Image 1 (tube, rainbow over the protein chains, first blue to last red):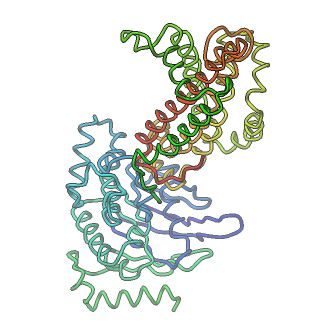
Image 2 (cartoon, rainbow over the protein chains, first blue to last red):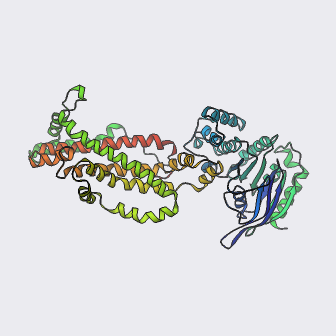
Image 3 (cartoon, helix red, strand yellow):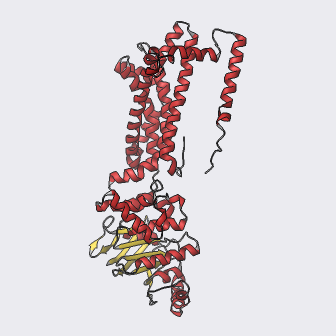
Length: 249
Length: 266
């Protein structure tokens, strides 16, 4: 369980996060929506231990976060920069497995299995820049999941992909999440996406000094489909509610 | 990224060939002792250095006494400078504080014209190979050091966050992220260093107290008014420099090729 207890952060005298409290139960996919520049990325980096929380505490399963926690993975928006261009796709995915003390052959085998699960069976020996943006983000997803993290943080992961690719990856994420107990915090500025992928949507107020302004449970069926789910009255109601909260009405 | 369209091999060498041909014609027309035609220089160089037997790779004993000592000094100087420059440069570049402290010193050291340092090394080491290698190392280390430091400093901050989340150890971080990121800059430094090595190699051999090497051959032939040998030594230096540079470029292409996305500066 991930727990944030009145977490605040400021850069100089600029408040970015203003007392954010959240409890995310194991296995939940939490969408965090907020306008651009509201501190969503800062929140994510604070949970990841990349930035220290200046006030308040963050705990994972009761252990306070100091530095990067174990069994944590992050998928960043900038897939082109987050993958290492001098390593093949397979070696990029195998990189986090070094921590587990596996031999080279075992690391590569696991990486290839994971690549197959994200639909990149044939791309193992290619270099990231030979792949399309969507495929590169699949590689980043494979690298994040190969260590079976208990907490996965995603920072607008599909924000720079075209609409079709983005929908494919949303479905891939839902498919991979099903049957796993990983907790996912999914940051986005896209209202529809937040409702479509989330079990729960949290809306942040615009900065400076972001707070949680709305906390909605998504009561949609687990099996989702880009066409039918988005047409359900429950989906439309939720997206309207999130939109209202975003606009402060 | 703009790729240069590769000219056919013949065309790329055409300018050089035309220049040499003009030189040949002009030198024959003037028939001056000071400016022998290139064909005669080539024949002289061949007789002097490359007419040995096949078992010695066609090198004559004179060539073994001349080229190998020079090459040995230059290569050992270059390798020492490269290793020291990369190791120190990355160490300096990884810490903003160390970088801020060292930068003025580095800029100063780099600005001193390298041959001016040779007299200092003559005093410290006396004449001979240690002095020569020390002069080469001390001159050639700065461009590698400064460029490696810049390269390490410019490591993408997002990638540093990525490897922090992947919980790589410090050596892994160095090997998988910092070194490959800095590689284009490191090679830019190595190319500058290589040409400095050649300059310092010749310069240190011109000094009294040297008794072998290409630089020594140059001064020795000049005192004997053997202009043909002087010219042959100059051509040999040019060819050697070109060969070593081509070798370095080939290594660079192999290592940096797949990562050429990072900006390169000379």
